[in-house]
Length: 266
Image (cartoon, rainbow, N blue to C red):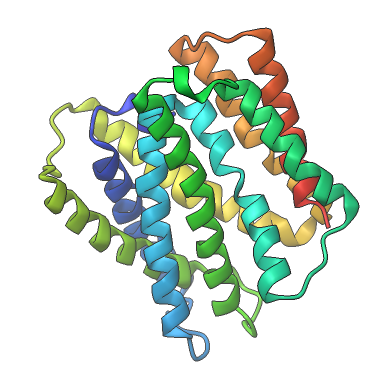
């Protein structure tokens, strides 16, 4: 929502999200008097997480601009299936029958939302769909790198790791903005508010709430609750930005979200 409300370019909004968020996370570390490092950190994995997260935001914010926040968030949720594929290929995990059913169900729901005839869609809309799916792919890479980097940790919230990932991503996104010829200057005063909310409420606050609650609830319940993100984002897209919708699209959203939830179950 805040990305849509701001008037800056996708790369610029992504930069401020992680730049401001990274500074706030460092402040949390300092205030809590937590050590910046807890154990030997696999720097290669942390570097991979930085690259994947920077790509994640760059792709997602473009998808938001091209197809709206509702569909872009739904597309990003397909990271569940990329994570499932990684579990099969690298960790030898065998998906159950419900998870295997979830993939075609979610894809069918997505086809109903996007439209079954790809050729009639505008080039920008098609780009938005592709960027959204790429978001899911690279976000899965980010989660895998961060997961492996935390292996053997103390169980405390990995605030230091996210601070490093945030500030490292900010550097990459600033470089990307320079290559694109985008200025990091903010022209509208109201954009300071939207970008501040994006960084503090969503990037820092939302992440801390998720990370602190995940160990306390069953996995199935966590997966169900997290599917509220694309549900609410689609609803707000309709309510706040006047997105038009049909019964077919609503059915597609429901099927896609059901597929994502089933795919997230153990």
